Length: 357
Image (cartoon, rainbow, N blue to C red; front, side, top):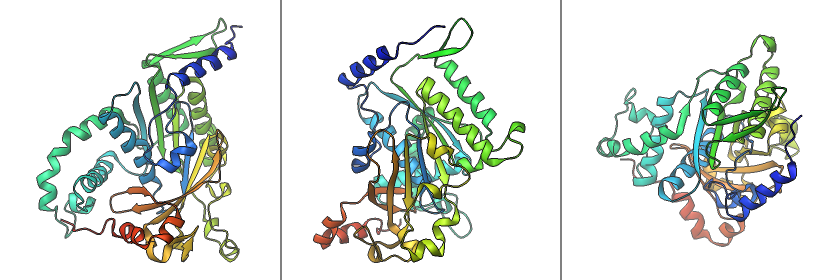
């Protein structure tokens, strides 16, 4: 049997690191990045939270917009592509949400999909119409990097899709027994993200016997295979179960996210390198959280909890401002800085409170 000498692989990674090749792509969040080391080849991230916490918006910020904008505006040896299974939101609706976000970032005009589509009594604002076509090139280039795959997904289709993608972008090496032992990419600096939003919507195959847990477990093992063999980087969005809303958790002041809150299966947490979870304290009537004045920040505050970090320190909690209308996250300064500087809090609270159109 042909063997791959693991020591040689280790030395190769050390040399890559010395040359700056393992820096990764920015996630756009400075405090978070210090602990999870940017977007990396061959890292599996799981992002969880209750309904309405902004999981999809965080994924789109950290794994789509921020790395895309960085590569668009900076020279880099990295390139990246995204295989995006958007199982909740079809691509045109997602693009409309992306447009609303970009218009806010560039012009501080708040708009939304109802306005953009002129739904019901809504009308697309004149200012939005005037600048809309300016973004065609931006989003055409983004689409070249983002491959929106099926709106429904099963483990078998996931394997078929990823194998077909890998074969076009590299070569599998087999031993004399026909067993794959190595993958050689055409571009060693290509970061391939595989986003599934959300994993609870995956369909089962016959071998899963209609069991959702089996289907999710099998899908996660497929992601692990392509992470380990091809250095693909899975990003899995997962819903929380209702346990976080239970009276026993509330009475014991224990409503912050836990690994046991993830719905359907433990596979995506066990298999992942990094597990993050969003928390919405205002939803549970909290007036303060980790020193942050929720009574003032209200629905715009989220905390991002690193529940697992296989390659570093876990337990970090980062306060974040979330402008839900456009799906925009910003890291907050440490809570003590806000307490000591009331003007800083006023500035944060003013974010998003600008003229609509």
